[in-house]
Image (spheres, rainbow, N blue to C red):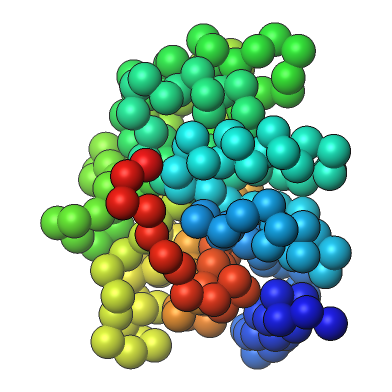
Length: 232
């Protein structure tokens, strides 16, 4: 077993143990392996361990990786910010987008999604704790954007995503994640039929799962430390 395979197994055990402790089914949470800055070989190693869903932040890097690995049955999630001049690449190559934070980007993705592909699965990114350096829309503005996105013909709105500031402890992390869960529940009570709450990463996935996350985005705990590019 390779290091990546071993670490995927360890992360899966963390997820399953937390689900069990919370009284949730073992399959209630999807693992998204965040492969940004790692090459196709790392993705292939993760795939050999049974991982099929991968998250990427840097669009050009991701497109090259997606093209190289198109022979594998992989699902690609865009989890980084999207500039207007990159929407076509995202619409043509990704299966999911987690970072919708304004209507203009959603409209461009819908318009540029090739007709032969299924609708692009999307989440709205919410700045749940008001972090000054974090992307995302304010919680109060989410319902309006959600209604607009849900009506776009080539998108399917699946839920919400958040990346809160690091919390000092488990309880504090849960308190922030619970705010996102509350907004998610409110939208569903209004008839939105959402099924995805994308929150939790390597350091705080237990708190996220305890608060209702259905998808955790894990990178360093699977692939190790990163060497970030100087330009993307």
